[in-house]
Length: 158
Image 1 (spheres, rainbow, N blue to C red):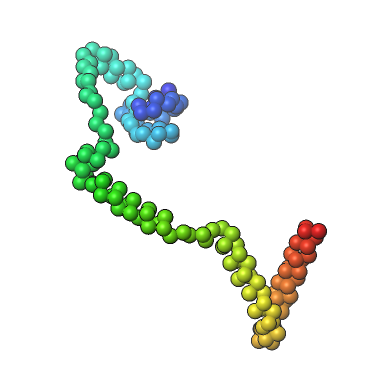
Image 2: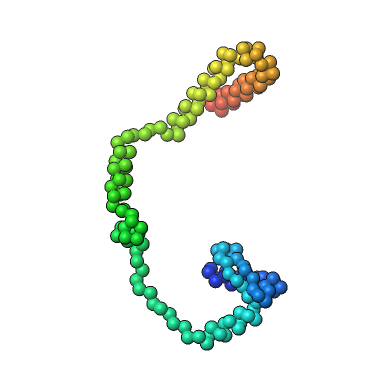
């Protein structure tokens, strides 16, 4: 059975035995619209009845612009003009304050912190190993990795 979505007009193939005589609630996999689908013979009966009815189409007037300040004030009580003034004052305050703390500043701070950590660990390496003997392996691995990174950077520059 071929099923058409009422909303987006997508077509789906559904087995005939999936739709019972009382109908079944189905959902469009594309637009998530839900409707009750009846078997093909009941649909034909409904279509013949609806053809006999006289269809009258009511013409709609011009659409209202839902985003005008007057409409928003009347319908929702929002005053757009005051928020524009508030926003422009806020932006002027931000223009006066110059913020030069960008990506490279963060990178430099990260490098300084890592170098400080490396130096502090180097100064306290013996005390840490005396207090926690099992940490000696990890500290040595850390220094080996730092040496490998340093050598690869030097080779890359040369």
